[in-house]
Image 1 (tube, helix red, strand yellow):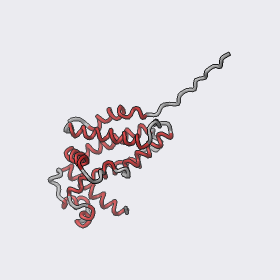
Image 2 (cartoon, helix red, strand yellow):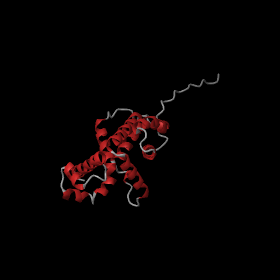
Image 3 (cartoon, rainbow, N blue to C red):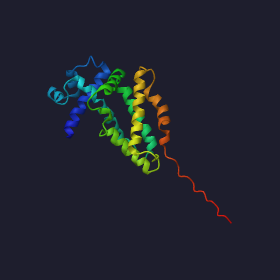
Image 4 (cartoon, one colour):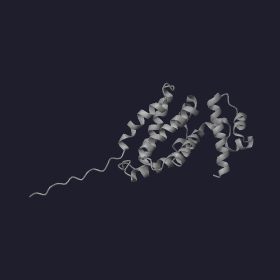
Length: 206
């Protein structure tokens, strides 16, 4: 995908979700999205059939947040801490930029869709970056290697989806970010690397 294509499509998606959050999905028009994104009607309909098509673009916002964090995080940070920080940043972004109603609608649509489930697309930056963190964490002994990289990434993504679904089911009655700060370490604690065991010297029989 060319850089211009990514920028134009990304501007449309970002503008749409800003408007959805500020004034609601139903009250947002395609014309307002075009104006906010500073694109054209031709550009909009080149990428999207209509406003409804933007509902499946939420994963782009998630990946956009991960792209930002990928540039900012210290590459030497412990992998365990990095995973928890990524979760906290993503959930904080969701609470700031995504309405509960639209998140619930998106998650529900992923259950019944017969097409591609974009939240499970393993080629997304979300999954690629997680695989990189886990692989490096295992090499450094910060994460256990009893499970494969893909198994750990699947467990992490599963925990995030479970927390998002529960938040929607509960009508957002609590802070998603604050609750995840308590629960994610509990969900993932078995993945944390163990310090090397000390060698025990067994005396030879005299």
